Image (cartoon, rainbow, N blue to C red; front, side):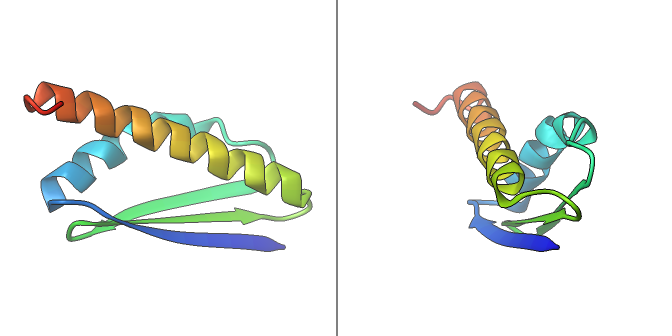
Length: 84
């Protein structure tokens, strides 16, 4: 079993929840053997990726996908808030 846990500090709990809700549908289609858990603790987004019976490259690729989705959601929300 592999497990990767990541904490991402954001500027507010509202932003964290917005990002979490934006990427939640992407987590449903995780590869077989992969479990993704995301929660907000205040302005901190905690991400845990667990893999059972999968290779380390599957875990790495899943984490890469999560980061791409998080970054896209963050950029869209920042634009909507009037940021650059």
